[in-house]
Amino acid sequence: MNILALNCGSSSLKYQLFDWNSHEKLASGLVDRIGQPGALIKHKVRDLPAQKLEINCPDHTAAIEKVSALLNEVLPKGAKIQAVGHRLVHGGDRFARSVVITDEVVKTIEELIPLAPLHNPANLAGIKAAKKLLPGVPQIAVFDTAFHQTMPETAYSYAVPEEWVKKYGVRRYGFHGTSHLYVSRKVAGMVGRPVGDLRIITCHIGNGASITAVQKGRSVETSMGLTPLAGVVMGTRSGDCDPGMIPYIHMQAKLSFEQVFDALNKKSGMLGLTGSNDLRDVETRHFEGDPRATTALKIYAHSIKKYIGSYAAVMNGVDVIVFTAGVGENSSIIREMVLSDMQYLGVQLDSKLNEAAIRGAEGVITQPGSPVKAAVVATDEEQIIVEDTVALLEGRSPAAADFRYSFEKGGASVTPANDVSTIPVAVSNRHLHISRKDLDSLFGPGYQLKPMRPLSQPGQYACEECVAIVGPKGKIENVRILGPERKATQVEVSQTDAYKLGIQAPVRDSGDVASSAKLTLVGPKGEVPAQEGTIISWRHVHMHTKDAARFGVKDKERVRVRTTGERSVTFENVLIRVSDSFALEMHIDTDEANAALLRNGDTAVLIKG
Image (cartoon, rainbow, N blue to C red; front, side):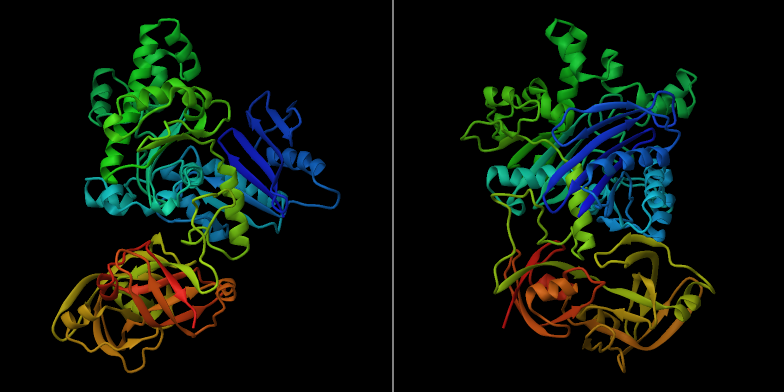
């Protein structure tokens, strides 16, 4: 399978062509100055020297058309590009994983443009150009923000008015997710331990920079926020600063808010400190004795050191600190300044290993006995794009707990053999599936559900809308509606909820609501007396047909499942549900999860027989 990975900027286009069967990079390159005079393609085929070509390139369609012609010369006779993977900068909270691009996905990306006005339009231009030039070829979107959707609410929330959050989506999103994902998985193999056992701090340090805390393979904190402006000092971005600075400069310097924001993004950081945003120039001036450059490097390193310390506190320690991207991979002096005076944390830097880790050289840079290891890993975001594309086309979910990338080695955990299989666990809180008729009654005729965030099962999402459920003895407010609309309304609660409401809710398979408990649903526009439809959902496992074939089970089969969390518990008679539209995941209600000390993201194993 020949896969094209595209990364579209506002005036540039990075690309790589992979032969998935041979795991070979066939070609790569960069189209620069799109829409400007003097557009240029830097094109490299395999290990041959790169060639530079001047072209007329008015837009992204012309750029992709020229790239496609160059790639056709590389492909064997008769071979074609069979899939395209796109890097998308901002998926908001709508996309928690890579997805196949549909008209609905394009529409959602367009809705998110206000969160990334400089990036999403360019990404969309690449998608539309690729669709036009390669009709019928599957297109996949891989989001920079998706990896950070595992952050807990305590990490992604800002202490701001609730209206800002609900109406405008103000929260921490984080960026560079594909890079943080790649290097955290890659370094696990380098240190010979499963990524699920590690507390990792990944430092993606380039012209743009972000720091991420990765615990058990999941992002739990990251330095960039609503926009890429927050966090550590960068090439031209200020990083963290007092928001009160904006109105202060607005009044004192008589600059508009747009001018202040532009200065914080494009005229600050190392550029503001030294007059240059190229760290190589700043380092040269430092070695020549320029005190301004030396101070700037110390400020730069200090901002990174602060985040490492805070993230070690968040995770109750750290096992590995990773440096990646242009500066992280090539600046031994920045790594040394960041890691200096960290003996309290257990970091024992090896100066010779650190100095040797430049120009693509990877490896651990701490002494053999160092309690906390530091490493340099060359990031490869295109590899994630390619492998997520392949996985989705094969019906596998890159977000599944047992999913492994081809570059994971050594300590990377694997799916257990034959008798057991790893399954991600999701704790299912009380929620509501709603019919069109009841939606009209509760919210008004023709009302449309508003997606708030995607769920683990493809095509399903949590909605902004909530209702109250009322029983004979009690009431529960803010019960979330899950989309899309269903043929019949179904309320799913726990046994504790049923006791509070004063109802006898049967434990049933989802969809089996005949003669079930009665409730009243209360919405902003009316009430609905639900004569049946309230159940406690029986524990079950969703499986794609390929997962079912791999595990050797069938739809509606009952199996035993053992959890592998803090407290190992074996559940009997777990229902298997199989469909081409499912992603692998075990669903368990809050009561059983609490008893087993299970949390979202824990895993279980299926025991055959």
